[in-house]
Length: 295
Image (cartoon, rainbow, N blue to C red; front, side, top):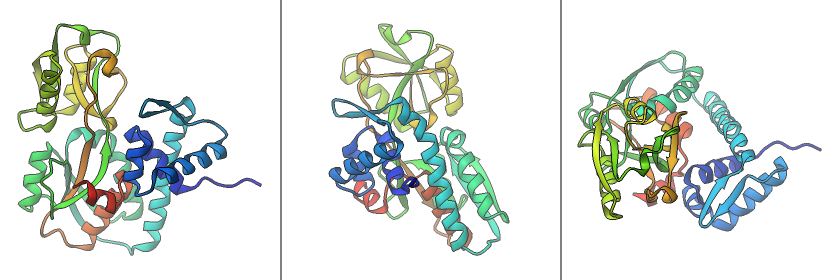
């Protein structure tokens, strides 16, 4: 007899894929490491193939794991949309949403498409700007909701809903990472990853200089793909033409990036609640208890 895939197992699988570790994933999904391991054994038995390979403390996806990743995300999203569709009455209204363009390119289409299916009469107005700008506008009620990189200042203001690996990336077809002085493509001074990149390389004794600065994530990744510089990007911003660099290339492992969902003091309508909950479900890989513990 054939049985379907377990949504809870798929959520755990996605957490491991994104965080690269069974231990980190266990914290994120609020389970013990042994429970996570058991879930993955059962999932591998169900699909009939191994999904992970171990490299020290890191867990990397096999070819089968990469194949399952997209299906798993779609199944989780459809499951959450179905439950929301039957739980909420039809809403009317307008919500102003702000987020950086690196999140907008990869996360926003799937989020808004699902939300529109459930709430076709709600208008969502999107503004793309940096995390600092989004945060300031949400605090001033110029935006209702925001998706931002958390810098530890969201207490009472929002929730950390997603944790992503940060990667050093270079051009796929060139080896500029071997140059004596690393050329960097970074955001403006207010970007948290700018200081992180410079400080991390300085700490391990690698010479670096900022060669390209832009507030646009698309411009930065295009500069990298063209061979102009090395950059730091989150998992969701990876694109063709980029090569992930690691310790073997002389680039230390980076801490993960916490993505927070924030809301304005006056964003209290049912439409705001609906989009807030939908975004948290669609992009989140942290339970609320795990998110609270991470703050």
